[in-house]
Structure formats: structure tokens, C-alpha cells
Image (cartoon, rainbow, N blue to C red; front, side, top):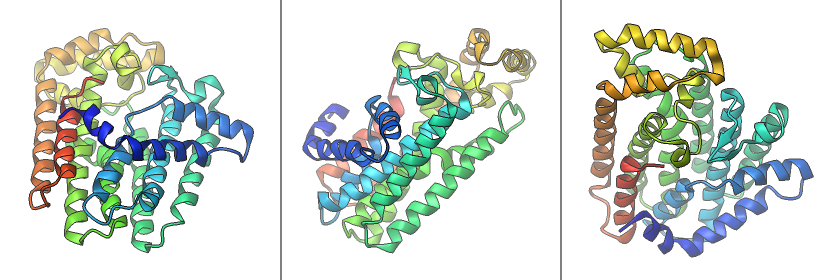
Amino acid sequence: MKLLDIFGALKKDMDVIEQQLYRSIEGDEDLLSETSLHLLKAGGKRLRPVFVLLGGKFGDYDLNKLQHVAVPLELIHSASLVHDDVIDDAGTRRGKPTVKAKWDNKIAMYTGDFIYAKALMMATTLENPELHRILAKAMVQMSIGEMEQIRDFFNTDQSVRNYLLRIRRKTALLIAISCQLGALAADAPSSVHHRLYRYGYNVGMAFQIRDDLLDLLGTEKTIGKPPGSDMRQGNITLPVIYALQEEGLRAPLLAELEQIRAAGLTADTSSAINMIRRSDGIRQSEELADRFIAKAFNALEGLPECKAKSHLKEIALFVNKRSY
């Protein structure tokens, strides 16, 4: 089964969620609605809402409840992207101008805040206090992850452990709770939503590692931004960390990274990218992503056999081998 087949199986409910996403940011203030809509219309994989729906399949599936989990989670993700683009001074996302590029930094920051607030407003309709606790804790951790990334810009001495802690907070936690909260909202047994959390966490770790690999291996057409964008912004990712550990490569790669730092967002990263591609960092990163996917599969063991479980396995495979 392909990813499109999974989305096709959920299309009716995903259409409802997509409509609710648009409705959630309409009407309060014209410019904020316009900027928020610009971001949402840029698209995205909508993986987090899909994970919510699939998690809900393990309990008492009720779209009216689940959409009040799925929409806030996608809004929180979207708000974080608006803020990321300001911090990274990014001109494009998914091949289209960012909010900060089309308007400005101030508008973008308030747009992100507005979307966050809309997410919290929608989530208040959920009665289970555990849902709110998990959601709030994840948002705190995401903010810490963002600060850690800023702190580590152009830090060429950071460890693999530092990197993994950062992406846990920035990416993996939101995917983990998307799986977990779908099951929790559907009143699935605690053993089920704990397993789904572990699945989502490991898929999220692999997702970010693959994202960082694509920044070095992809093309602007396939990834929607110029390759090497992470390095231009000072974000030292896993393949770069591994490459810097190679004795014969460390000195020339450090020199290239220093030139990139000096040149800023106009820097030519092609030489550094070629060095990293020739290094063992690509293989090591791919192997670590594979290990996270294996852990995700292991987390699904013991769950009831159903279509949702098969879908989760297929999504894990897609995440780890995606080219966009």
C-alpha cells in the first residue's frame, strides 16, 4: 500500500479537518486571517492529523472529538514553521514565499502567535484534562528545542547526543503526541496510547533525520528550498556532525563552514555539500534513521491487528525513504 492509498482511505475525514483548519483562522482580523491562510494553503503532508485519525481507530472513533485534536496539532506545527522562517530568515517554504518574505518579520511573528492561540482555543473544547496537560508540556518542550537550535547555530563541536535531544523537542514530540492523543481522545486503553506514543516518537526522530539528509541530497525542486539551507542558517545537522568527526575531513569542512558563516544567506554551500556527500556521515545518518524506524515497528507489536496498524507501518516506511 502506498501513502496516497492511506490518505485516500481517510480522505472524507481529512477533508473535514482541512475545512476546519481554514475555518479556525477566519474572521478575527483580515490581515492575520490572510497571512495564516497563506501558510495553510502552501500545503504540507498533514501527517499529524493523519496520525491523530489513525490513533483514534484503536478506540471509539469519533470524528467530532478527533478533529478537536487534529486541527490544533496541525495549527501548532504551522505556527512553529512561521516562527522558524523568521529565525532562519527563510524566503521560501514548500516552494512558495514564506509569510516573513511576503510581508515582514513583525507580521510573521504575530501570525505565528495568532495560530498558536487559535490552536489552544479549539483544544479547550476537549474535556479530558490529560489531553491539555500533554499538549501544553509538548509546546513547552518545542520552545526549548527552538532555543537550543538558536544556541547551537554554527556550533561545530556539538555532539550527536545534543542533536538528538534537540530534534526530540523540535519534531519528534509533536508527532508522538499526535499518535497518542488520537487514541486518548477515542478512549483507547492506556497500553495502546503509550505504544502509539513510542511509535510516533521514533517515527518523528527518523522524520527529522531524513529531513536533514534531504537538505543535503535533494534538489530545490524536490524539497522546495535551496539545498544547503540548514548550513546557511547555521543549523549543524546530523550528517554534518558525523562528517566533522572524520579526521581527514574536519579541517577543510570547518574552513568551508566558516566561509558560509561569513557570507550568510548568500553563501555558496556546494563545496561543503560535496564534502559531506563523500563522507561517511550520510550512511551513518541513514543507519540511525533505520534504527529509529525499527523501534517504531517494535512499538506497534502487541497492538490489535487492523488496517490502522498496517497504515502506521506503511507511513513509517515512507518517512524513512521519502525524497520530498
